[in-house]
Image (tube, rainbow, N blue to C red; front, top):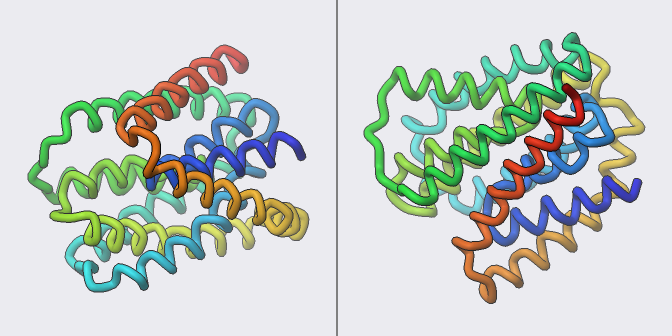
Length: 238
């Protein structure tokens, strides 16, 4: 249980500090000792209420031309990812997850160092949405979509509203499917309940630290830690 508490505190702290990155940190810490089948539903349970709240709070920035098509493709990818999660060998899945974490860290660092706006296209939207959905279904991580929307929205209000709306839809569909497939179980719901105070504490500390720490350096440190964790996970499971 100690590792779950550490992961919940670290993940929520990063969420409060950087606004994103909680799911990769949470999953990377737990991946050393637990299966993705146990980690994925708890991530979804924590994410859904937060995403619904932020979507409502920032609803003026919602743009149906952004969140509706992205929701469709990410849900499609997530469904495929969930069925793979149920059937892929645990060791193989952890190895793939390690490589994925390394890739995500590199993408985030590249995006941070070269924050240039890109012109969205239907092809790029479909590819990134499906990949993000696949990673949500397998690993409960949709950071690829975060990178994409951050490059295509005009301000932070619009970014938060649309990204959280997409993830609220995906979280809902994913949790329903996980429950139907027997992956989301009563013991997992109970564990999520036990961890709720840790999430609240970590989020509070992260928000308080945001005004005192250099946010850019903090984000880069998180990204470097993700890459290091991914390498360690791959080395452990190969």
